[in-house]
Length: 592
Image (cartoon, rainbow, N blue to C red; front, side, top):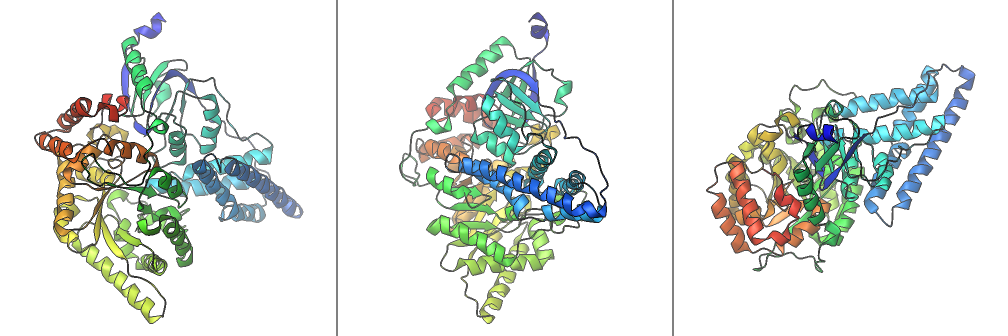
């Protein structure tokens, strides 16, 4: 005990991917790769080997169906995630390619599985888009499950004692399912972002989790005491007694989402009657079913690139129409904003391309759509043909100026004319611009005059405005959401929308964070689109504040010259006026 107490307290930055506070001792989860040999197979035994592999695939399907069905009633999100795993072994080319390797190279199925999964993983990890990059963990999870079946081992991780802090390089969704049974205090990983299925499950199960902590094994030892702060994104190593007591109080006081007072209708308004529209960000159609239960009014952002299962697997016009019909059916008159493929060049071909030196500033999003109009036209046609009497809209991502808007609209018009000539029924749709690039902010008045609505992507806006990679923990302190330049940019976009009389929907982490929403409402925001798990907390907050108070808050914030000053102002104001509306732990941690 004396030795532990003598170690200095250290605060390490991390990426918060599941909110909450965890206090406990460390246990490392080491990956144990299944071991096997490469074996050559005589040509007369190839069919037998393929039969063995197909039998393993069927057993794997049965396991995934059981996992998906088991949670279908209690937890639809869990069911959806393992449904994605099931699709990998049911409908993708993954299994077919493994059989091809077995036959062409005359090798055992275990080795063929390794060859193909390594190819998939290498291609998936190299793509620039974080959302698609994080799908690699699902491929790895399915591959490990298949391999376990082939060599007769259980596809699970060892359980731990309750209350421990689990540290791993990365965790697979199936590992989270097993580990949750032992009620860990928190999870720390080196890899994994907000949109990964592992992070989604951690949030669903209320497990505090942070990622992006490198070489943690060189900093702590098994049995060391840690605090994981999933609100601000930090790990406290060797915390002092008073630090532990502080965070224990915050953990005890934290408002749990499921304990929020029920809001019995879908409308959300401030105490002085200002309507605030809460919409949902959606990757898969089924997610909106949960969002509706929490009070979402439409899909503010459907990330259509979620339909791309792997690089080069661009869905056909009919496949896209099927997904868009499903979205339109569940959203109804509340409507759906479909963002066109927000991807990089490395995701458009299975063959892959040489990596760009800086893909975030490269040929991606609307630039790629306007450079390779074939797939863009296919997507536009699918949306137009699905529209009918449905409320669908198009969102153009990463717009940097008016010329991209005008060129995109001309392509949309050409597709409308082509459909008319072909005698195919369709309805014209509204077109909006995603504002996330500084040049778009500086030309916002011209853009606003030529679109039907605006979407403000705060995550990328902060990244591009401050020249800070939001996934790079080395510059995490420079990623300041409350930087005066960010606040002024948001204000400019909201003012332009108001002057033009068109709606502005705020997306990204700011829109789903109770810490930022009062400031955003004071700046003029009336529409927010967020992760489904943020909806209840935001609606609870909005129903307890007044528009007049948010205006007072903004007046004071305009006198702040640094992110730190603004954060201090917000925290002080919240504690004085709205303390009961916030999870107390959230007001005691860093947010700027």
